[in-house]
Length: 594
Image (cartoon, rainbow, N blue to C red; front, side, top):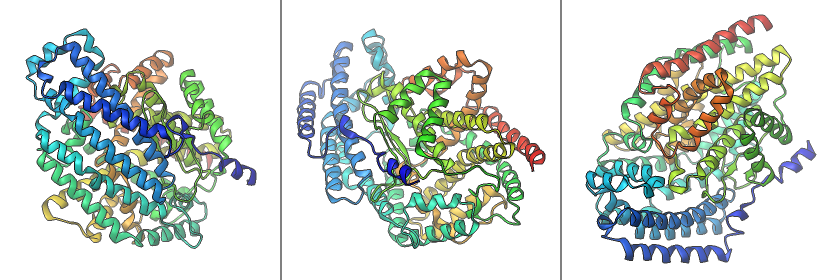
């Protein structure tokens, strides 16, 4: 284990493909270049967009894309250096400086989108018919969806000007507080304390839950203030931009209508009984009279050894990816071989996991906090799916490499499923198969049902903020327990400790409404996987096209190519029916093995 620990200490990313360090002179050179380009753009095109022909529009967009690429590269470097040094004054100062500079440059070039959006439809149609704009056609059509939600030029500039001290600053404070927080007598990080909830020792799980709660309580007042401030920020933004509800802006960004998401949420909610059914089985398998919140992730008594080495995880994932697609395997191999992954838990590194796209000319970077659990295999497979997706998108350029959130979770969820099925195939012991099968179902339930429960919690807190004002800690906790209890339907007893666990979930303040994308992606992947099993060769080609073009076509149109109609409840119910069948098979398997 000592050797493995020493190896793991070396698994940190190499950001030199971006810049060498925060003092790299290339950063100032790129900033200077971006400023020059943006000012030249403003001089050449401002107040003239309505006069430009198709070729001139193309040249203007190419220049804007060039400036934006520089800004994204610098911003990515600032963020990636900060998240592994969250308390470091110099990195925080650098990140703030970069944000202020990029916002100033963004002010110079925002005119193009504002002027383009205001052009008459017939003029737009005529311009976009020219072949020279084929690369940017979807992008140019797509930004016009914000027409009724944009403010005046001066107002938009002002919002950009003050944004460094707005929501993003509160989010950084949130990350800083939780990044520094330690839990329990052993001063564990968030990732380490959460990993103890997967312990096979019930007292360890119970103590971990207690320690986690006590740690969160230390900053509960500040974190609640952050939540309320960000909720108010969104309320004001939605009001001045004329959005119908708190979720409308997210849905518009996802190129999907409100009704489709309501259909998804209603379908999942109406099947919460499957959550109860699964945890009832788990309680029997654990031989417990009652399951508490700290028992949710308890391994079964006959589970396989949960301590995986980094090399084991790497080999399992790469073998799985290569078997699915040589292209997937090669891309994933690069993440490991070229130090695009930061896996080591250490002081001042934020918790969680992500794959962060930089710019098309470079590559994404993956952050995870590796503790050696089965859950970590799942997490790394998930983030590598994101990374592969981001690389496939990059060949279409920066403005075509930003898929809606609902499709952003497709590749990641699919690769998770591939790895789970790989683990099942290489596990010979029937009892260990049962344990893995439980894990697969549990992960699926968490991704679909739990995320929709989180979404319903978001709905309640946003609605409360808009109708009744700021929420107290008790208000947040009551909504949290209410939506969690509705999901578990009595199968899990929620303790007082659990009542404040809403406070550490960053998605609630970073990207409101994001969580439904997990459920969307998981149910979509169930249908995609069935298509894969029918004809693997033809599926892979269509699937790679889906991922590659997810930033250049609307989700409805892309998914129709697979015969999917996501507007109807029957589509979502088909995916949920597969989960119901898995639970039925689990019952049968448990009777045969136990």
